[in-house]
Amino acid sequence: MNKKSINLQIEQEKSLNRPRIKYSLAAKIFFALMDLVVGKNITLAKTKLIETLASIPYRAWEGRQYTKLTNNYNSSEKVKEFKKIMEWGREAQDNEYYHLLVINAKMKEDKVKDAWYLFQPIPFLLVLFYRIFSSLMAFFYIKGAFLFNAEFEDHAEHVYAQFVKENPQWDNELVQSEVVKEYGEFENWADVFRRIGLDEREHRNSSFVFAGKDDMVA
Image (cartoon, rainbow, N blue to C red; front, top):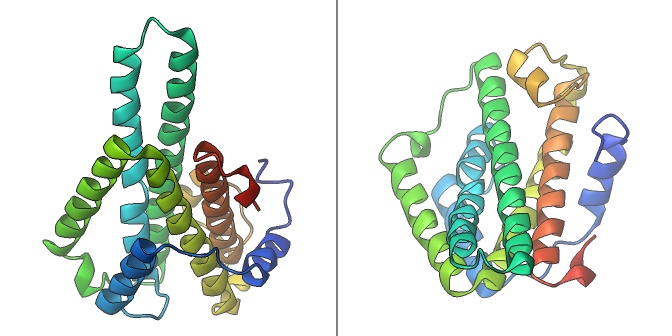
């Protein structure tokens, strides 16, 4: 999707007005535990933690697909299918990593310090847990892994839409960061975070497609 051809304010409103999908018990527990650890309020530090975790499933899928490609190199159809997932996973994890860099740039600009849960060993332990969880899901039930990721991304989309709503001053804060300019061209910080939220929606929709749930795309 062309980043310049979309009205990001309209897309944010769509996110705010569209109900969250019906989350599985595992997703509800995951989100509840996160709120318990870091608090329910949306902060830059909280979104930084979300993005620290967000790229992990895509890396797990990429590793899985490489194995599948190696074991099925004689089947052109399977190679095409596995490669498509692998390439999407690589693109998505790069995108999530840019989100992390952008949020970090905003925190530096606002002189916001990392919250206690962003200091080691807590991030390491959280990442380790999520990496093991994602790898097991990818190995034993890849469709379930896609569906859980769709839930994670749906949650993230709504978090960012609400976050922008709670920070109307961002519409008047011009973007100067070179890191953000690498991510895209934006007039203000509100649009930066609106774009991140839209990225999460696109990741959710792709997850549904690969899970065979095209009817859930919105």
